[in-house]
Image (cartoon, rainbow, N blue to C red):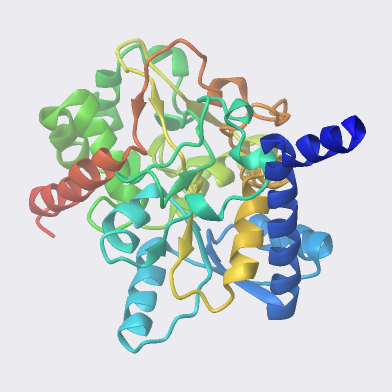
Amino acid sequence: MAAVIFIVLFLAAPGWAQERSWEKRWQETLAAARKEGKVVIEGPADPQVRQELPEKFSARFGVSVDYIGGRGSETVARVQVERRARQYTRDVWLSGVGTFATALYPEKMLDPLGPELILPEVVDPSKWKNGKLWFMDPEERYVLRLLNYRPPLFNVNTQLVNPKEIKSIGDVLNPKWRGKISIVDPTVGGSGPYYAAVLWHQFGEEFVKRLYVDQRPFLSRDTRQLAESLARGTHAISFGAGSEDMKRLQAEGLPVMRIYSVPDASGVVTAGNGAVGFMNRAPNPNAARLFINWLASKEGVELYSRTRQLATLRNDVDESFIATEELPPSGLKYFDAASWEFQLEGTEKTRMRMRELLKR
């Protein structure tokens, strides 16, 4: 009798029941996802991400991936048109926080993501550097952040600029650099308003006016073009050159360098395209749940981190391949350029200010 009572109590223990509950739900989700057959993901246009994420996920679970990659503002506009026509084509959205804050969340295109997280290694707070899952939206339910890294403040061509000469951010305003600076266009959606807003927040309106107007910079929406023109020596300094392109050019031995800080510039962290959301009315909801859980797991985050070459928020991922400068040291305070408030109040307002400033 005692043995029977022990077994009954063991089976009724909360921990055992919880474990059995997630396993059952996971297996049901996996079976339903395989029946759906595919998941449709909107993500960054990066070729390596486009190739490796679908390949690994499909091999792991037997569910194919339709990966749609493009510029944030363009893809959002396309989906907005589709949804007005009651066409629902995306399951998962993987992008910067700004896309969620300014479009997907306010237009109610998302379902709560928190309840869809199943795997113990995903929901376990001890697996995350913050001691919890970092949801970016005001309700802390819809937009999960996976990446957190220090971006470079600007980039230089080392044949034209001695990095040691730049002892203050004001040194980039030296008249000798007039016409020799390139900047990502701040008047359109994307990374341009982000860079302008970060500079505005840190150094003020007068600095921004002198940099964007008085220095007569070359403006481009194409961040790869900015990186390559810097490597060729067409420009000496670049704000907003593509991070992946800069890393590639530097690895190829070209005379470029990423500058992460100067003595009078406070530290900045951001998420890049490191936020994920679960689209409502998803055509393949179970495959979407499966993908999001996998992406937030150690395996998924590490793969995404390696393809993007960016630091993560998980504490069990090997980050030895990431430049030391990009890993935010613990214990220091940083301005979070991926915060919800900054994306709403900083980036969008700055874009409108820059349109007025540049008369566009």
